[in-house]
Length: 530
Image (cartoon, rainbow, N blue to C red):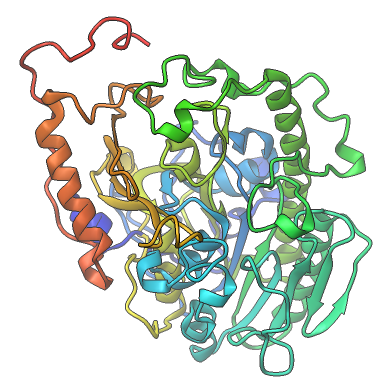
């Protein structure tokens, strides 16, 4: 296990006035820079340029955190502006993981740096889920406030938040500017906002409102003396569902802005090309998947076109935010981070949705730019949602009020950036139905650079995938005798991490062994080649 990962992954420099800092957030200055992959020197101006160079953090830069909702890693292809303004101008993390791929638990991890067993949010609703299970008084916005930051939020917050729970004059603790969506969250039109306690219904398409309001907040906060933290939280491309069912089951295509409705008329979902799409042999999958019928390809194509259209507005929204930073004169002193709370399956393993431990659900985009970050770098180390809050705290000089499970992110450059580590992360899903799942968990397991291991709590069913040999997770190796030692080791790691807290969640571990090579695999033949 790479110690570097568990110790952390980001120290970012501020080089005010230098060309790299100006270019980091795009705009006309980008015209004279080398594109990613051109062979140009990607280290920040003023550094040694040696492989593995780190950057001295500046004193309290601004931080703009932009999140999409249910966006897959593959869907970055529909965000050309984000790729240009942030990816080519900054760092792309190619193995960013959502340990609990569901809206509310993942957002709680973003705000606390803790796994669900420690932050209390295991599901979108129920005794251990939703906003009612969250503790905002000890979350990251409070840390930043105490460090002297002005904090602002606009858009989707935590599932179950309706505004009635806000304290301090209608503003959630930890926030100076508070504008969450509180009604019809996934409708894109006709939704309700809660701007510092003032309930109203904007007429604009939701993504456009969030982007414009973010730009206004940047203009206001940039004029003040304090550094600022802004969370721009888009709903796109999350699916649409009835207002009363917003805790889950949003499988209808998202509403697309009128200007984008004819953007992808002939788009075919890329998921259809995967061997895991409408997987034919399902006898080694958990029972709830084995019983599922094939998903109509027309439905998946329609869904993908709508998601791509919704992401077009997100792409424009990110550009609006970046332009606001440049117009306010604060771009040189701002880190911009873009990600999604979790991924989404588009018919892989006959499933449409998230929450499962498959790669399409747990791997999500993460790009960062600004503050003199090297341009066009792709960093292959494993980082996770629980690392974001510690990263922001370190950058801001803030002290967490809780013991965090993640670690600050340190960018790697040169040949080191391509090195793959073997960090073991906890992956899990909570349950809101405690009669059916009395432990409050649906499944728990671990993910390493090579393996995915999941054990379902109710019946003990185990999934084990060797992603080096089986990247589409078609062949469950849990009962393969060649993987007996691998399964035992991963089960031990899962047990440790399900009980962990703080630094115990970052053990210094050796890489997991390879499977034994003796004898044929059971069921060799039809299953081996699927």
